[in-house]
Image (cartoon, rainbow, N blue to C red):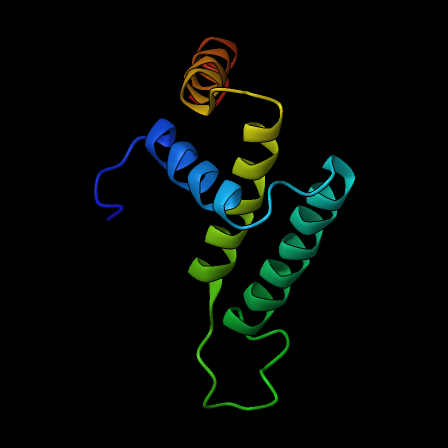
Length: 105
């Protein structure tokens, strides 16, 4: 379903799902979800890097899952505000490319 999808496709898929399941949360609630997921990512990276082993050592480390949770929550905010993430990401990459073109040589 998601192989080689653009951000626009992903935004549309998430928007369809959200609209079929009660609609978007208020913006601050969605932002809280992003922050919560970032905290969960930090916890998983602590486990992965060995700083804080999992209590159940057989439990899988889920860095990818937490990154996807963050992306989902960010896409929800973008959709709420009608932001095209394909365009915005392209602009950000261009900004960093121009700004930092000679910075790390």
